[in-house]
Image 1 (cartoon, rainbow, N blue to C red):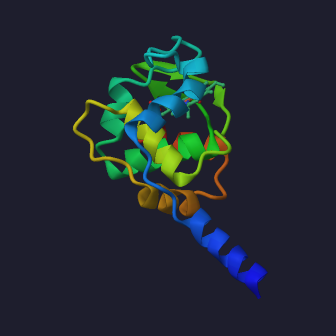
Image 2 (cartoon, rainbow, N blue to C red; image 1 turned 180 degrees about the vertical axis):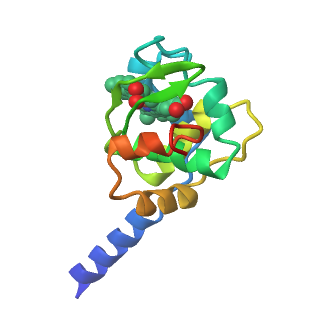
Image 3 (cartoon, rainbow, N blue to C red; image 1 turned 45 degrees about the vertical axis):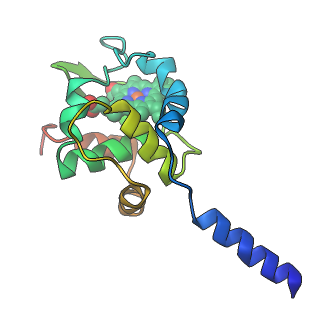
Length: 147
Ligand code: HEC
């Protein structure tokens, strides 16, 4: 009885994710910086910049969904970023919960007017995109061919 109660309490604690802080976003971004570089400038032709295009995407509903699923599911282009075509693959960033995905995206778009990503918003995209391949995520980029 006590053990079952303790387990239920433990599950409740897991479900209630504490809101992530800006500091968390910067810390999580370190894993992104391996490819996109610390300042988000990227490497033209290999790793796209996380700059103006990403900020513009964060201002639209379709763009926000795409950004979240890039992180959760990965992306395999062709995608166009800052006028350049990328035909690479970004692996899904496994191990990030909804709060952490929101925090890292808020870090990436900091300074823009986009409203903040929330864990609840990310959770919805995660459920809706659970079966998408990285190639399918690429097709969700607003402005991508066929959209
Ligand atoms: C192993 C290298 C690697 C890591 C780590 C990585 N990315 Fe990427 N990312 C890529 C590549 C490569 C692409 C382009 C994929 C393509 O060509 O389709 C990309 C594309 C993107 C895009 C799409 C940009 C656009 O304008 O459409 C976003 C957003 C993004 N990454 C964010 C992140 C974030 C946030 C993290 C960390 C949580 C991260 N990436 C970690 C390699 C990486």
